[in-house]
Image (cartoon, rainbow, N blue to C red; front, side, top):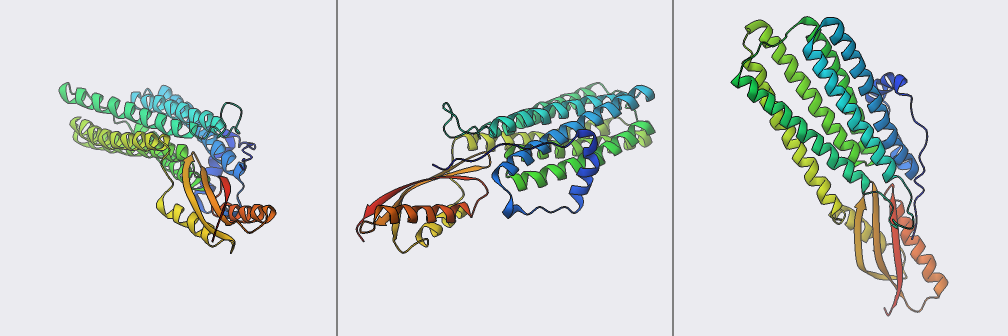
Length: 326
């Protein structure tokens, strides 16, 4: 069995991260084909840690503005950013666990920890949706004045812009690192900026109409979208934990690589595939002409493995050479 080197690298400093995030979201393009397995793992952890650092800075900035301006809306948003920071840092912890190499108790590694992180993001989103929905319904039953100060609107607007960049940054890194955990976090921050946008719209409408019902209407709409996102994340994470086979198009590419790899290859049997985090696992019996020597059979098996290695960033391949008659 081929094992992967999943040792991580260094991390950006959170205080220096915001300009890097804006730059990366603009034009930086990485060479995905040349990225090594451990670079994928460290990239995912670095992204999670950077985002948790920015969320912490946002929470502190909102707290300062909220206290100085006496804005309850801004202080509530600061609490939300603090929750985002904790969720992203939990992502970092799970990704660090997922990057651990195989050991005596976990022969196939710890990659499924990443699916647990995705499920955690779904639970966090579900709790947030329930909280928004309950608060919106309570506001309909007992209408309350909504603060629509200029300070609150400007602060929420700035927070929304930063959150949009964070979500874009996470989506880009999730694609590059093939990380389901980062994809879940990206959906989390997408729900945040939609919620912030709804809050800003509600503040503006209430400021000009004086009718607080708009806040509840927009709140329920956003809660419904976030609830759907929560179910989507939990459902997919649960499915990944059940070891489904790789997508049909990936299996077709593997079969083609096997069948066209070497003239001595007669065929294959018992092809089994699955995925844990960003790591694919491929197992099969390679049918080789029994007239060839053991050394040749070994070399043929290695060539087949190299063809499959070239297709994916991170893959563990187990091949059993089976001698057969042509």
